[in-house]
Image (cartoon, rainbow, N blue to C red; front, side, top):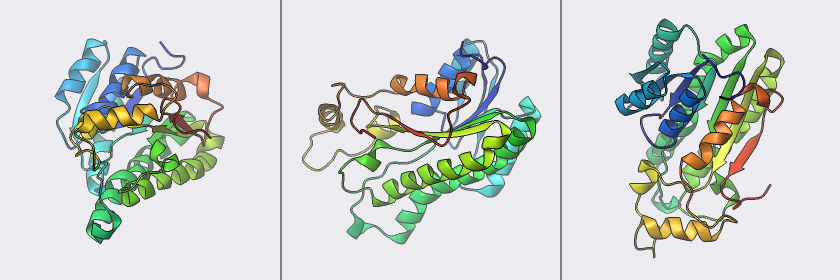
Length: 255
């Protein structure tokens, strides 16, 4: 069990599957109770958390809606009384050439990937500040350090998360609240598996294999490769780390 995790409460957006579900499972194993905020049903994640001996509940929430986020925060308050750890994991990863991109495409990606981070953080950061302890972890992407096409809206949203993380870390640091970001590489998850492969590649398996050739560790990334970093950043051991973006991508991007 990670230091300081026992009986803490975590809210994880996008935790019905993929990376968010893996984070929920790991933090539950660390001793954390979990609230799942997702538009998709979170029953399976609830079962995983309960199997680890922790409490869980799932709230269907549109994280792009201020009213929906406020309703979700009220449910968390009613169930657990607080949020100690916030993992802003929900996001989409569409590939679209800039010339075909419409403003509504741009706004959809920015709304889900970046606006939601503001809304959910704004809902829980005041309580963390008041109690003098909190951990916020946001998900960026190693695409920011990669030469890729078709992701102008996506990369813009993830760059915004890095800026948001740095700025909020400065404001919350004096109150015992840390704010950090993680940049994974291309990770095998339901979201990425559902995408069409890049032009010239037969399927997503070929894209995962291609990504692995660009890494120091020559295998595709999976959600379990990222959970240890989340566990560490949300523990007491990481109390003096804030405003940082950690690349967890098998050594593809160096900073």
